[in-house]
Image (tube, rainbow, N blue to C red; front, side):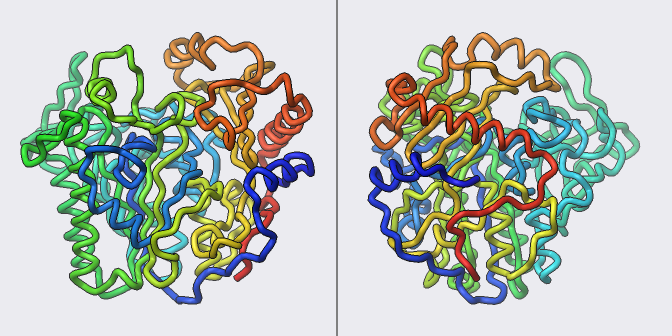
Length: 500
């Protein structure tokens, strides 16, 4: 996605970007890789991102020892689109799902069998690989999973050596953990069934307890690291916090923001256990660690839930950003995003470069000098310069396409400009018709005309300036249309990418 002259000129003026070259990725053969993907963690929900009164020392430590990003994006404002894009380097709306928002716990695997993933890339380079936590990209091949049979294809078929976790959310059927491709704690001789409107799971004993899930998943991640620390490894750790149900363990209480704050602090504890394990085996200096979230925090000041209680107690869940999870505004997409690799990523630095979670695949491939096959990672950019470069480094990408919870609700950001498309939206089919009906009336809060924001001047998206800048609206619309029209293209041009 190339930058137009007008938009580029405005961006350079707004940000005063110097024209010096970027640094290449560090020349280290096989660093360990750890990706921690929190669930529903808002941009303003860590102390290092401005949260007052929260105790998040371990995430804050990552920021002190690494680089904190202020313009990092999830490509979707709900979880499955982001998880697919992180794993494959591709927007979910290029798939048969179109929107990805109808993926339930017993949906088939969304990732195509022949598509390169983070796990298959690293496994091909001799890494041991594990996914632990929330999966939510589908399991098996049938439209309805059979919980009594191996759940494949799944994580093991897209490059992971080991999986332990949950199919989707804790409240989704079946209420059971999965190890590799089978449910655990099955009652011998009894079929696993899910019955009634409450989706009661029979044939599993004991059923998982919500308030013990973070401890269980964290313990599995630590145990896997301890068992595999002697060879290069890739751990994809996707804890369930802070997605509802908001059920922190009894060991976490006393936050000024109630159980919502307690759950954030339990998430931080979990990060601390991973860091402690890396320190124990003296692995931190040779481990690239990324901490981020799958979408923005739940935010609706009119609802009655734990996040609303926390908000009224003073927690700016998504900071100064407008909206939250599922919305088309910044609070739905912009994420906490910290990259740490001691000695390689400049410590204690902050970057305003635009990066997207989908960029992980291309950047790791560049770092390992592995060519990406044509037709793979179509929406992944090499952002080595943003991860590793100094203040003079050019960004690895200049724009990002965003998709909100209504299938045909798109936005595009380029430089400081963000366009939200309301006029003549494409007719994008959705798998989940009920969700489409529920969200149709809420798209853009009733806006009928495109909205344009200059995020450098108006980060909270308070006033559209579309009428004042019709030429920028036209150019961003063109960029968005061209992105959606190229479904079968090979790797896009990557302006400003660092060269290995």
